Structures are given as structure tokens and as C-alpha cells.
Length: 288
Ligand code: SAM
Image 1 (cartoon, protein in one colour):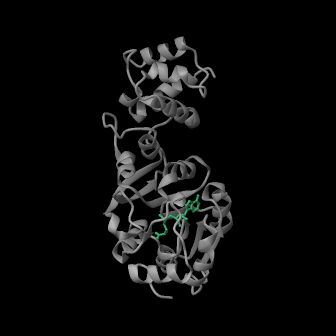
Image 2: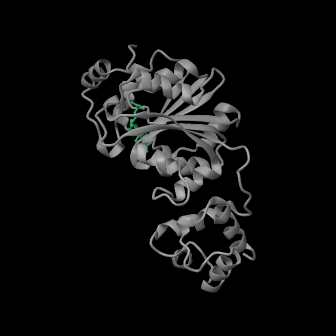
Image 3: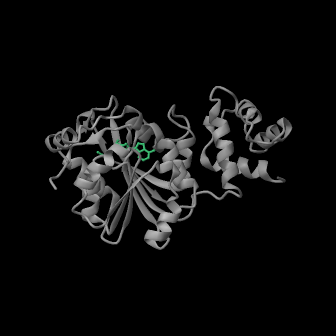
């Protein structure tokens, strides 16, 4: 099968199957071989690896991954792409395509069955409309992950890497800091895709920490607190936590914990770093 990482071959296969792009699935196909090589290199895929690819599209990156990995499992939601993938990936005996919504796939079971429960690598040119749920879902579930190397909107990549004080700082920045080391492997302009997205993109590699950089008694509680703090950005931390239906704490308890941390009552969530959220979570969770 011809290499799909260029506009000519991509257009040819799309026309052959009368494929119509679906905006709601975030379909922007890569047509630049340098970018594709860079992604696979940044992911550090070797012949031992089991790779999960999210959204293979017409199979462009899947071909590169299949050349490098022991096995690739590619999960694609759009059933109109399945016959195309049968043709473009027909030459590989180490690729499995699953026609499903990635948010409904039991990735932990896949890792158990296909990789003996060892950490897997996730590689994807992500559909941008569900970047955050996909990444948070992979980190928060019990999936053994080695690394996640993904193309995302440039702005989202920036959000993943930033700290307190920046306008981009939020729940995603804190989750990434807690679970992984992040580095941007490439910036990718719109002309590397068909059709061209409106925004710039970046490839980011998130390498999962063996141990999180802070200790917290109840990880789930900490992330509920983090989400509540950023849900109402213009509110004080105290009000944000108090108004959250997800949290059971009284106004007095919240005020007491903020004071015990040496913070002013008017402090906002966006001023706290990961260590402070861990401490706040331990204080609030004390007698739950
Ligand atoms: N990997 C291809 C490439 O790089 O050319 C296509 C990437 S395109 C940005 C995103 C792909 O994810 C599309 O093929 C789209 O149909 C698929 N997709 C969208 N939502 C999905 C979901 N919930 N589960 C699985 N695949 C999804």
C-alpha cells in the first residue's frame, strides 16, 4: 500500500471511497511525512511495544506505527472509515482495528489481554473536541500507561505545561503535572492536514511518573477539589468549594482549612500549586 503521508495519496483514497469528512468527529488527516516520523520518534516506539492509536482516520499514522511496534490496536468511531482501513492496513498482520468510541473502550482490559498488563504506549492525532476527557480518562483510570504522545491544539499543549499565574493554568495543567512529565516535541501548522484546522497544533509527549511528585491521601478527592476550584474562575477558592455539589464540606471547614494553610480568605484557586492542592485535600479529607 502506498504511503498515505502526502496530499496526493490521501486525496486519492478519499475520492476512491467517496469519503465525506465529518466535522463532529474532528477529522483532520495528517499529510506530512516529516511530522508523522517525528510523532513516532517522540513516542519512542520499539519492536516490543503494544501501541493504542486513537482515531486512525484512513490509517496514515497507523502504517508508521505498524512498522515500528510489535502490535497496534487502532480505535476508530467512524464506521465509514472501516472499509478504507481494511485496504490501507491490509498489508500488516500486527494491526487490529476496533470500530468503537474510545470513551467506551475498556483500555485496561486491552492492556491486560494484549500486553500482559505491562504499560502501553498511546499515540494519536487526537480529535480535538474530546482531548481532555481522553487524556484525563487514561490517567485517572487504572490503565497501565508508559506514555501518551499526542497531537493536540497548540493552546491545549500550552495549558498542559503551565503553572499558577498564567491564564492557561487549570485542572488539566494540574493533572498533567501530577501524572506525567510533559514535553512538546513539535509545533505543527494547519497546512500539514487535510482539511486544514483553524488553529495551530502541537505534538506533546506525556511520560507517566512512576511516583507522583506529591503525596496525597485521597487522589480522587484532590481532583474533585481542583475541578471545583476552577469551575468558577472568578470566585474565591472558598466560594468555589462551597458551591460545588461534588463536595460535602461546610463553609466553616473550608474557611478553617484555607486559614490553616496560611492563605488569605480571598485567595483564588488559580493561585495554588499542586503541593498546596494536595495539602488542602488532606486537611479537608481529615475526618471524612
Ligand atoms: N490519525 C489520523 C491522521 O492522523 O491522519 C486521523 C486523525 S483525526 C484528527 C481524528 C480521528 O479520530 C478521526 O478519524 C475521527 O473519526 C476519530 N474519532 C473521533 N472521535 C472519536 C472517538 N470518540 N473514538 C474514536 N475515534 C474517534
